[in-house]
Structure formats: structure tokens, C-alpha cells
Length: 293
Ligand code: GLU
Image (cartoon, rainbow, N blue to C red; front, side, top):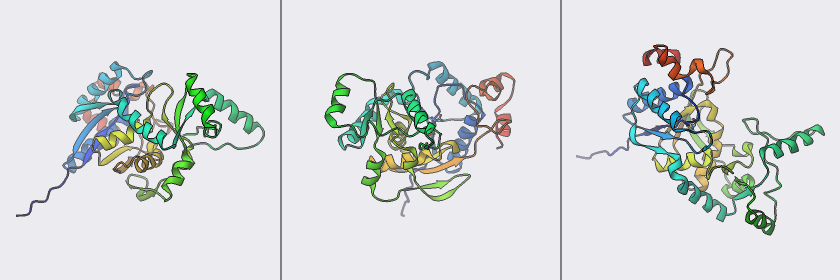
């Protein structure tokens, strides 16, 4: 008899403990859980807590409490990003060695000022899909000796991907497979719309983009189910997967839960917080209905 060995699909829910979960997270968690169950797959939980200033143990405890209440079950152990900084740093160093990443010294305020001055002259400055101005070329074009001296002087810095250099190296269009609510099929990645993205922050030894692709690979994630707000970020993830030789999951970007004014929910809005709704006596079934499932 020939036995067909099929790898189970692996899903993950990856909240950040920098606030309480709201209805948008509930939709994402339910969709991950439902799809994993329907596909006889596995569901992993990842705590994306690289933002050391904003993530707290209380918010993390809240995530477990909210997910338990919703009836979502995940496999242990939970992966907590703060416990894996050396892995992200190793990947960053491999990119530094290949000359694909450079230290950037301008603060956000300095960039803003620069852009405002430029735009006062009637010129337009490129912005990323989140509306953030692209990083100016100063640090990218710096001579090596100057760069080394700045680093040696202990100046605060982030590490950024040299997008043009990375794209030249790839030399071919990259695509990802999408099964989501808005677009489906093979989607052309357009990482250049992000400019020189941060791969390691000045206040943390990684960034969302770098950690997420490494974790998805190390956790063997085959299916990424997450909100449409991260659709465009997938272009960066696809590029990093290519540069770091990581496998690519299938992506499903789902609709967002919006407030009465049609805006995406944010963590500060109490009336859509899961803990508040639980305290009001709602059940997990009520939450399912509220998010349209
Ligand atoms: N940690 C991200 C968030 O809470 C989700 C990242 C992802 O699913 O790729 O929005």
C-alpha cells in the first residue's frame, strides 16, 4: 500500500501585546482557527513583542484571556519574539555583509522636516503605502569611512534595506500566492513602493518586517491569514524571503472590521475591545456575529 504523506498546513495568529485585542483581532483569530480546522491543519500563536517600549506582560496576559474566551486553541509553545533577537540579528548581519543594508542616522522628525522643506518648494516626495515619506538617500550614499566613524561614535541608528540594490540583485519580478478577500492569484510584489525599509530599529534589535519573515519560516508556517492592512507589506516580506532564502507561505488577506465611520479599528477604542465586550456579558458566539461570521 502506498501511503501518501501530506504535511499538515500550518497557520498562525500573531498579535502584538501593545494594547488590548479588539473585534478586528477576533475576526482574524476566528478565520485562522476556522480555516486551520477545516484544512486539518495546525494553529500556532506568536506574540509579536519586539516593541520593547509599548509591549507589556499585562497586554500579553490579556491576549491569552481573550483567545481562551473566544474558544481558540493553539499549539504550545507560544513563540515570543523578544526571546529570539539573536536569530533576527544573525539574518541582519548576513544582509549587512552582503552590503544590502546600511545604518541610518536621521530621526523621524529630521526626515519630516526635510520633506516639508522640499515640498514647500512645490516638489513631491515619495511616500509608502502607509503615508510615511521614503527615507532620504543621505545615509545610503555615505562613504564607508564616514559611516564607520559615525557608528564608532555611538550615534543612535537603525538599519535599512538598500531597496534599489536589493532589487538589482534579485533581477526578476517576484510574486506571492494570494487567496484573500480582495485580490486572488499570483500577485506581483512591489517592494520599491516602501523605499528603504527599516530592518532593525534604533530602539529594538529587529523590525516587524524582518522578524515576521524569519518567524514564519522557522515556525514552518504555510498559510498566513491576516488583515488587508498588511496586504502591501507582503511585497517587502516576499523580497526578504527571496534575499534570505526562506520558503514562502500562501497569503490570505481578509477584510477589516471597521468602526461606524468606516475606519479601521485601533487598540485605543474601548467599545470594540474584547475585554469590555466580555465584561458586558457577550459570548464568543455574539462576537462571531458581530464580526460577520
Ligand atoms: N503583529 C501584527 C499585528 O498585530 C500582525 C502581523 C502579521 O500577521 O503578519 O497587527
